[in-house]
Image 1 (cartoon, rainbow, N blue to C red):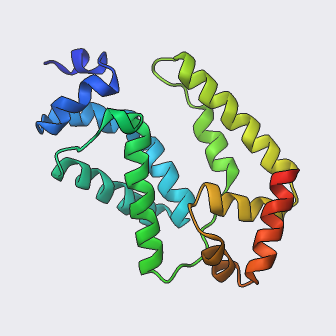
Image 2 (image 1 turned 60 degrees about the vertical axis):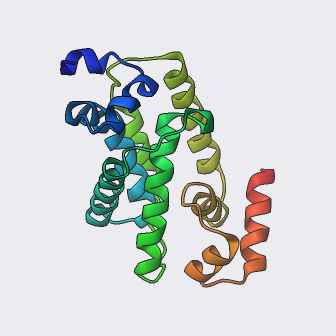
Length: 181
């Protein structure tokens, strides 16, 4: 298939071609999800170079593993970002678990970029992201920080307590207060 034909395919229809190691299909897959993968990796590891390494490692893993995507378990994007998330957390643990820099402005800049094709699901995702950023921005910094680390970084209460050098009870309390607000 030609690249322009592949670009018109839905992710779920593209994945069988990716699993057969079609390089053009993989390029389309990367073009669709590479930016989100880098953004997630950056939010977790907090360093642009490390985020690039994490994203590259994740996509190489997807290529080498013949893209074991299972549509019954969720969307292609969720599957790909799950791999990126796991690789980023592994990288962070290898480095000794320093606290990542989570900057909501970086995400806001990415959200302003024009998508090649607007869909209802993408519009809903963007609106939800805007509302979440607004809600987190309204919280005190100490509450939003623990929520970001837990939900966007994927860290446990214990890991957050170690990274921020505070008692686990304080982490849980700030999390509870922030979520209630």
